[in-house]
Length: 104
Image (cartoon, rainbow, N blue to C red; front, side, top):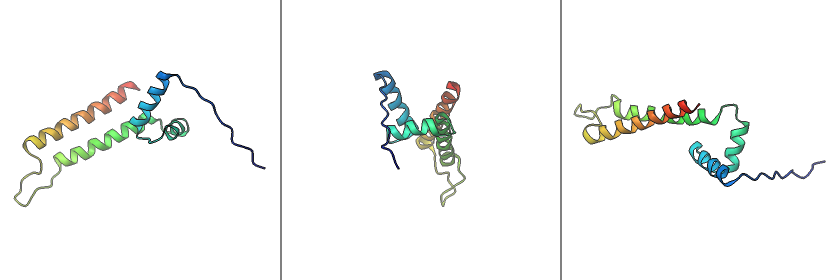
């Protein structure tokens, strides 16, 4: 015999709601419920998932900038302003990983 589901009544204050919403977006969850369930049930802490995502982005950026792909004329793909932009994005990703690690 199945029972009716238990409704949980949780009432975070305004500051807690803002923090939950910010963390939910930063962790890449589309719903608050999904984020809260993952935050409590996952064995891997969410800050490690966030760090892993940043490291993945960093790897893609490095491949884009430093990859050995050359065009038909033997030139590297990124030069000049494109290379500077890619390097800036790599620095931003490195800073995000470093900040996340410092917080833990």
